[in-house]
Length: 266
Ligand SMILES: *[C@@H]1O[C@H](CO)[C@@H](O)[C@H](O)[C@H]1NC(C)=O
Ligand SMILES: *[C@@H]1O[C@H](CO)[C@@H](O)[C@H](O)[C@H]1NC(C)=O
Ligand SMILES: *[C@@H]1O[C@H](CO)[C@@H](O)[C@H](O)[C@H]1NC(C)=O
Ligand SMILES: [Zn+2]
Image (cartoon, rainbow, N blue to C red; front, side, top):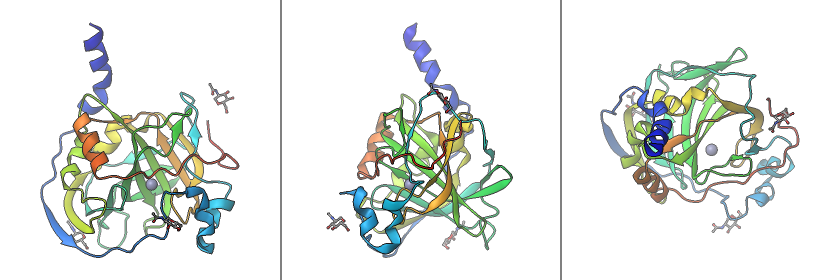
């Protein structure tokens, strides 16, 4: 009895999500620039060069530790995430990374989006970090998905963070591309012409519970002024998917930052 109840408790978010399988892919290769920073000592990023100074001197740095069960109820996002998107899958050196095409050929205004406080944020890219960057009352998850949103012209303005956890059920969102992710040392670019982003949202309980605060990019140049929404519902990956993800990932968690002016809205 207990066994079937606990399975049911994990099931609803995924089972309620619509079906989707991507249609085709092709491989292109292109050189990418080497990074001048790494995860050996993130606390020293600020001294690598002047453009990264805010990594050390900033007052609204991300990620942060979030209070378990004490969710936000302001700045609520309303999603329009039904379209499938085309884009380029690469490995950013530490895990999968996907850059969306501009769906209407000139800007991102035709892309999946969400609106909060009257501002619309368009999806421009996503990637993962291993382990999670945000912590929940001191606990980290095995990984975290970042859905990077911006203005219609592509200036980053808001990021959705979704903790990734091990589950008995596989993630239909990750199943769309997990078999195509290049290795951490590869410079391959894989074109995917149909990725359904609505699954990511659905598998995170549609962000019905979330934390939101004003923070920064979690990698250099640590740019501040963007708003974070972190899902209170983690997305589940099966054991097979999680080990596949870890196989194409490297340690990429900055570590939680001191709370100075991040102003968590609860
Ligand atoms: C990591 O970055 C630092 C600072 O830029 C550099 O001094 C160091 O050599 C790098 N380490 C590796 C393993 O690349
Ligand atoms: C939740 O947040 C409110 C407002 O910051 C705070 O007063 C309260 O103590 C928090 N509760 C818990 C359980 O952390
Ligand atoms: C997406 O953009 C790439 C690079 O510009 C292009 O080669 C590809 O055809 C585009 N895919 C679609 C479906 O528009
Ligand atoms: Zn990130």
